[in-house]
Image (cartoon, rainbow, N blue to C red; front, side, top):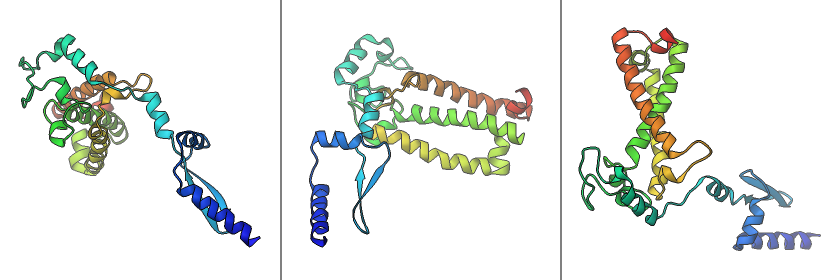
Length: 227
């Protein structure tokens, strides 16, 4: 009996260390939607079988590959790509504005300097996401506390602590895909497209700024006074 258990243990260890083929990986990935499945090999010993393929399934559902040819074609036909907001024509190798093919993480420089440039992928994405979270947080907090955003941030201080803790989390989650060569345009799920996120983020940035200015004049929480 001891010999049988020993042989099963050796065989299991060999299978665990051996590389799996693509077909075996696919079959093992479909066993469970959880992170790990534990199977007993011998009394007092367990081996962990990692469920592979979840990321591949999510990528297949939500990810769109953006090619260099598509970007170059968009540069030729999209009027907004032929000049910047200041009217300057994008020039290759310039500081600003850069052509789309050079400022996109998929085809351009993936360094932090490029991503955080004025026309890079990070600034508007991160600021828009922070503004969307901020406007929702302001509405809920004002209804609950009856304090303006300024009072929540500086008088009490608790709001500032939560916001400062939230900024690096959102920034980190936004930067990692860009460093891997993926912009927000590559991801979509149902109505959650990059275009919708950009416009919602822009409106949230304007809305949050308007909220601060309005409360500075009326000295009262907007969401508590009018909603």
